Image 1: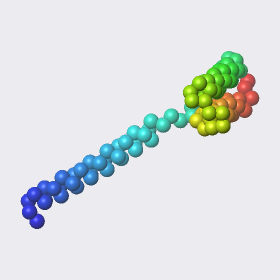
Image 2: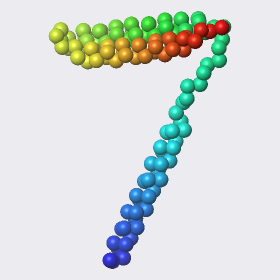
Image 3: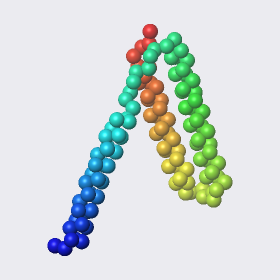
Amino acid sequence: MTRERWIALAVGLITIILTLILLALLEQREASSKVEDVPVVASKYDDHIDALEKQAIDEAFKKYVGQLYNIWVTDNYQPRIPPKALTGARNARDAYIRAMDAIERRELPPRR
């Protein structure tokens, strides 16, 4: 083998090794940055906070679905084909259910 080939081989191997090290470091960083479910300290305001959260989720859901409807109606209205609006509404419904379920799970053990 010529000297140039050895150099190219060495550069290639070093590049592969550095890439593997970088990937390992990124994986480790991602694993350490995940937030664990830390229990929230109980408070006398918990019931009120839960009610406010539910109200905010209700209002956000209504506002978002209203925006989807306005966009569908005003932007190239097609009465029989609202696929983007329907997809957005399905996503909003899924997010609403997950958020309300999370609040419900947090409420399950009776407080106080």
